[in-house]
Image: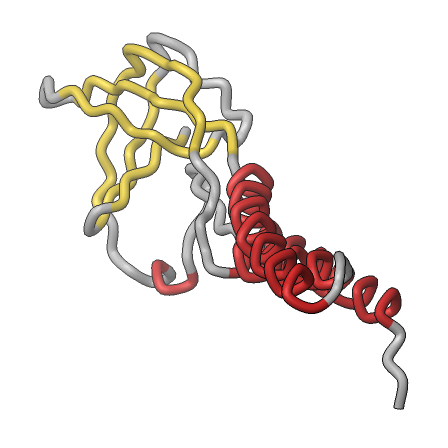
Length: 158
């Protein structure tokens, strides 16, 4: 049975793109209104305070094995189409390494999110800074907000 190299390369590219889109779609929300399933029906402490500062930040993207593996697959297949014999083997390895690096960069960039750092003075005088995904809340200095806290997670909400 003769294998069509061009068809195999196209199928690999499509599979890698589907995997990359899957990574972007699986990125969990980090905003004030996003909860993980395990947080449902869990008691959380609520504190009130006043916004003292707001600044834009960037939340780096995810770094899972999916991006590099998909990129390496595409790069290896692309490299295997270059030359023949020993040169083809070298091109395959170089293509896989370059593809893996590119895949990792694409995944991180595709899942990067704008964030916001909100500095809040609580009613007891304590000052906290909370970084979360920017969900368009547009917190304003002097605004009264609530902080919802549990084991290691804090959210600023209205």
